[in-house]
Length: 481
Image 1 (spheres, rainbow, N blue to C red):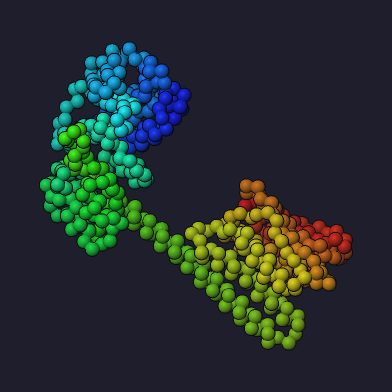
Image 2 (cartoon, rainbow, N blue to C red):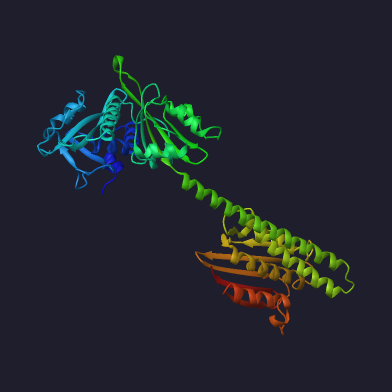
């Protein structure tokens, strides 16, 4: 099915500003369909004025549809609907005289105006025998007529940016119609129930909506002044927070034709929804996330304490081998603490590992002296915590091992090359040192034994060693995330 933009671009001559107005109307016309209990079709004249194209349609959520098939993309010749021609000529709203309109259907054609120009025709389709049988239906239809009249005067949709709230609230969630003085003319049962949960005692009928809302909210702060939002002077959106409930509100000012054809204030339509349970779940989720971050923070602090104790013990050791072993343990604990520090600053259980790798390179290469340089090529991207922690230890061991054993003259380069394609990660830690000895056995080194265990057991990856005599060594690790 073609989109409205496809049809407008290829079949009509609307100016860019007119296209923007059409987009705004289509974005906000669900309320018109719901209040009128009818289908809406937007017709735009073709570039040669030989007829009209249906560029968009919408069905009501409050009643049955009269459109059993989609009509978007349909072309109607001008001679088939003279009433549409009269609307475009500036003669006001008309009943459609298309022979295809059945006896049980009424189609009202309304001009869509932007400024002084009629740029399209809005067809409101409803059953002829549809009679309002309740106060709710009477109020809905009256509001629909008022809003459709605003479309014909170019006063609806209201110019300005739209939020997700405007798209999410529906007439069925909760509906209030206010008068020009701000008092409630009608409140739907859902709206009344929401206000009772907010703290209302009694009825909403004939009360000042801004005052009763402020009384229910009390001193609890809101994100928008209650009086300003509910006064109906301008379009507004607000979240009203009470002691027991939270409501989302959207206020749409309504006007009626006054002197010289200008719109005069006629109250407002207020759409609302009780989001108390949703906000409670959000608070619980935020609390859980804060707890997880606090746990990571405390683990990091504890690991740093352990590292400090090991460092203190190393300074008291007289045996060089024992001191070196404790210093290695300090670096291993520090690499784990670094991952937990990163996790404590985020909102999920994934970490940007590039920063961790760079920090590990800087800290570990302090062992090799200023003549040992390091670089990272490629990017790790985001890694889950269960991968980041063992991988940080692996990288620490490999870089530290290269810095200690590959450069007898304390000068050289260590390169960490990373290649990640979707969930496949390959890391190569290379040096340009003396290479691996002829009798190399990774099991005789505690550090390389740790690397083998972490890569093959915890990460489920593959580990390989490569050596080029006099030109350095490479450790290659491949794993699936």
